[in-house]
Length: 258
Image (tube, rainbow, N blue to C red; front, side, top):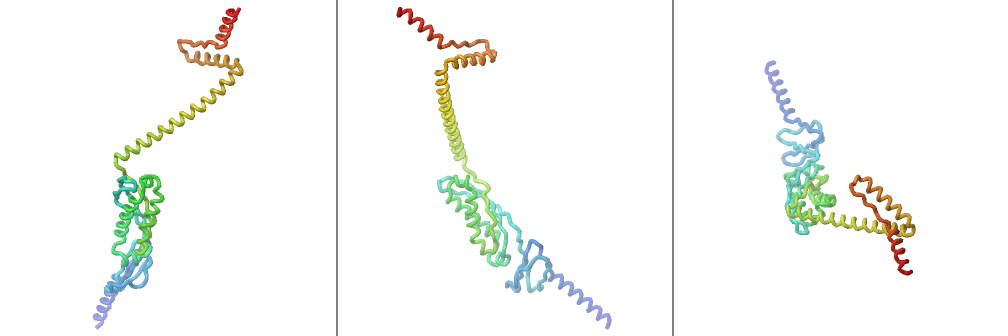
């Protein structure tokens, strides 16, 4: 009789251990647990830590609450100014409502991926090429809003969307390079013309000053001689004073008058 009682106690203990083992669950810190009782949502979301479920009656689903980084495959489209481009993007999102992420949508990651691709193609068609290349911050905000609107009902929050790369055809790249080169050449010519204008004004002021003070011209000639001689040239250029020519001209005119 005693042996039968011991055997029954051991069997009951083993059954209890198996029951506890099958009922025990551990939810990690970055997860939330959603319990379904006979196919229906039961209670609230289970927090991180140790929890139990009724075996064969309740089933626990764990939902990752970490931020997910999802690359959006490159989408080809035609911009508003009729340029064919290929745009790559990346979406950062996380689950904020674990129950809705399981109940409202079959696969929230796949749904977000498809919504991101559709929204990216829509953004390409509504934007100009210059906006895709230079005003990405505004496009990122518009793309985030387009994806986040339906994702709210799925228990998913879009953290941010970034356009990674915009690929252009080779012909368009060459055209843009020629345009940039022509623009740089135009600016260089404008700068040179402005420099010539400023130099001409200064030269005119210098000429006026030398006309008022003839000795200044002689000093400038001497400075020119010193600068030429310092270059170790085999030929020495000696400027001839203009005043001397004028003196000789006046001297030639006076004997003719006499």
